[in-house]
Length: 462
Image (cartoon, rainbow, N blue to C red):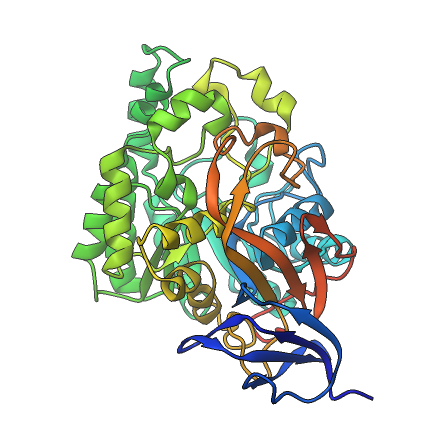
């Protein structure tokens, strides 16, 4: 019997202290060793990675598929296949579903549904529901990876999807932070001021609904920055492990800097905010509507500055597929359009393209979209690193290759509504994705099987 199952040879491997010309040995779903070229023991199979870069498999900490609800938008199978094609080996699913994942019963149901269908590893967020210790403790026992709340009210007609997740009242927000602080798990917040949203949405009723600018005017940056400032003030008392989702603008960046050191908080942004502006939304129309909105070039510049100085340490997809019919039904009407874009196949090529442009180093790019998240959520170094004993989750990339986006090249079920990314040509291409030592994507083809993904909890990773 060979000492190794697989040996990845000839590539540059991203280790915690940087790139190294080494070979990587995999055995029984784990990294067995890191070897100088030519010194590894015998392997049953080899992968020639010459000219390629070998990365720890990407961990996306902000993902939506909403399953088992709304299969017309995408399923666990379709969207984890897309994740594998994008180089992602672990995803953290948000609790919006029908009904909301805000009870122990629903958390267990979603866990079982994902386990039956996932091609890659998955973790599940929980919403704090009734804000009782009993419910909180049961969901922790089931293994939720973290918590999620919104500071906005439930969207009209979707109360059951946001029951126990949406807390527009500030007293309830403080109750949630205080209740969840003792768990030690991150609390992710979609932060926009409910009162300011109501004010600006009312004013926007007089504007042209087909204009992309109307969406920004109905949810301006101040809605986000005020909510973030209030949360960070609350957290000076609650002292929770707070994480601000999808930061979009310069004003919020200034707030984050102003509160530095006041509590344990972190912040993320997403590729749609780093690589596109309202001008791109105007071209793509309602297919590019997201909440909070995609902003302006000055905001994009501020986000890159925040990444450079460490104010923002996470880049996540906020992948949110919708059915073509749903988007089409709101054609020319931004207020009525469902918010979300399917970005799981965009994040790695986009960040590799940023590396090629000199915006950041490969190490920093990987930290932003993988290692930092694995550390924050207690999974490192099992996830997010290639060290002996780490999970054999690997993303192999051709940094000189090219990725183009069209309905024909995408794997997500929502490929026909990814207008924001159509026609983009990015330098950097995922060539192979390996989960627990098994190839789940290679050269354009998803090879991973249903049920291959494992349930990841704060106590257990592969």
